Image 1 (spheres, rainbow, N blue to C red):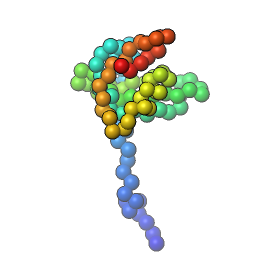
Image 2 (image 1 turned 90 degrees about the horizontal axis):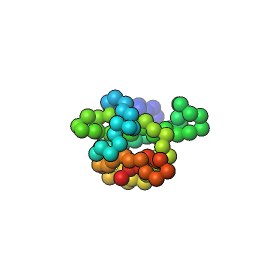
Image 3 (image 1 turned 90 degrees about the vertical axis):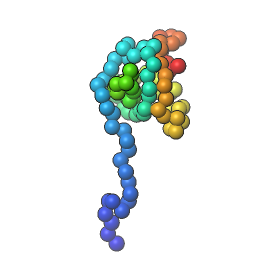
Length: 100
């Protein structure tokens, strides 16, 4: 039997990041909405991970790139059905970025 790809009913994941990159310093202590994220191997620093986050700040969609392990650990614990969510990113203890 021959198959066509459409027979598998496989849809693409909706991870098309939209907007311009924004520096972390420009969103500190601002209310943002987080839509989704991905964690991949960093292209900047060998043997590290990079977190890409789709956010909205003041009605404008933006993208954050960070190597913050604290943010990665926190965002991975958010249940998938709780996205999008509102938050702020602050500089926490030991100069770590944190969601609050």
